[in-house]
Length: 171
Length: 102
Image 1 (cartoon, rainbow over the protein chains, first blue to last red):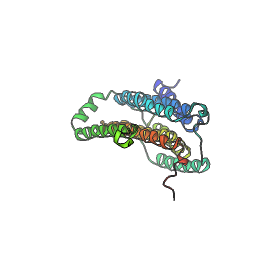
Image 2: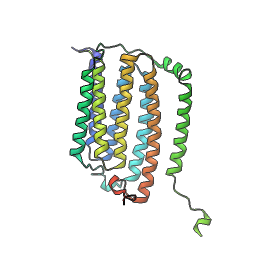
Image 3: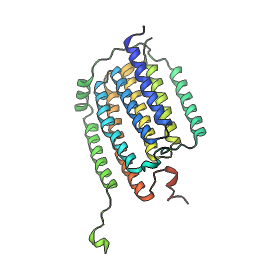
Image 4: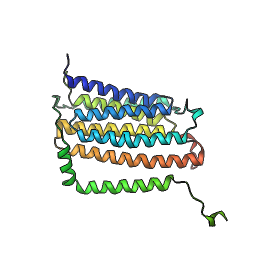
């Protein structure tokens, strides 16, 4: 009987990669988008096993609650329901397959050629340390990050709004 | 079976490969965006794994928080652009957006 942590890791990895496979190969954009939910959940679980509990909560809140909902809205607003069946066509599969294989081979060679520490480490909570890091060492990047978010929000609103014709433009 | 760093790196590498494949094969602009999200998640997972097994501390997690912040703003901007493209072309297939060709 393998230890519980190994079972949890294998289940989360299977959830992550299985959903990512659906994202990559499904012919229906709705299925792809909803499968991304499984990937985000699996990654959040992997974060917990890596002692990043705050990141796991953030992953669920931001990705599942924000980004995924946004993407689903975009899909619904840009695809007609009747041609939803093959709404996600693929092209250039052989080239992409070849390049992906090459990239994976290089990554695998680097990963197996380096001597990593292989012993497992216990997961410990790290939220308090992360909070201290953000309000101490990383305060400036943290504030810059909030400015980036504000700029992105305003930019998205400006880009996505329907241009309103003013009365003097109609004449 | 002991779960070390290399197992997490393998998951992250396969996730990156699937994301790369998605970005390269999809015609639907939203599909391409899904692939970008997969790639960003793979990179973030790598940061957290290295932080846990090698670096210690929380610097890797700080990086991942910034990855999440940038991914959220990127998704908002990209989807606004996709909506505008749909308004102009009545389609979001990437091979139909050829106004700048020639």
